[in-house]
Image 1: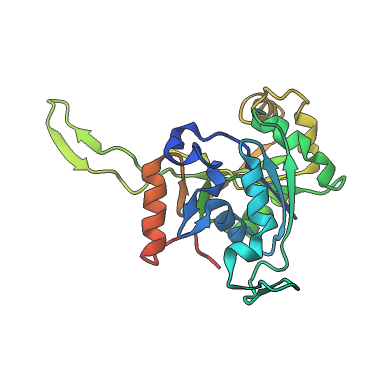
Image 2: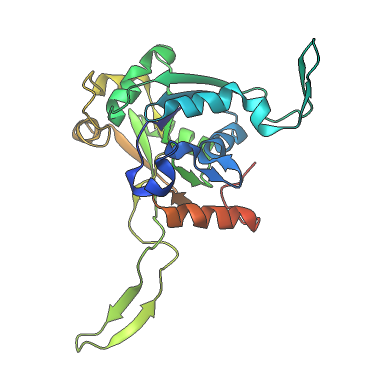
Length: 260
């Protein structure tokens, strides 16, 4: 199945990094978070990617255009007959990456609609955001989606706790205090979606429409939205602190999303 990754937003909450590059290119351990997301999918056998470009999309194009240059050792011959020798093989040699311009300021629904031409008629596809990683079992989510018979399946995840939680007695005494619980009990949309081709029928050519608003609401109304509950680890990269946290996990060799 083809993997569609939304990489066009400006990432304003991570301005320390995104002033200079798109959020999917913010590095974790020397590799863009986009690379980490693609490695997750490739581990489960999904190696055809459609990248929806927007803000500073030229930097994503440059990264993949010079992929061998960026990821391995290189020898340059500087004589009259110039030559470049790439020394390293890599696990990404069977990746197929389509880089699609979907508009500088487009919203998410329009970006997905723009790449319909790259998804063969009748074929389902995978869809996620370019700023979140997880140890989710991609193929299990696909099987869950098939069994549901719905148009779209979103992965329901538990966000990491950002604030301390307190249990307060009626008289005001604090019975329990927990500093930043590992996970909150509520579910949120963690991306890592599975969509039938009919998903495109819920999208319009209006660049101002967000996928998470009218199209999702219509899917709910039509009873065509399914949830795959992922009880494991998931982490977005919305802030500088979260990017530092992901880098720390990678540096310590404790990155839960490294399933490859």
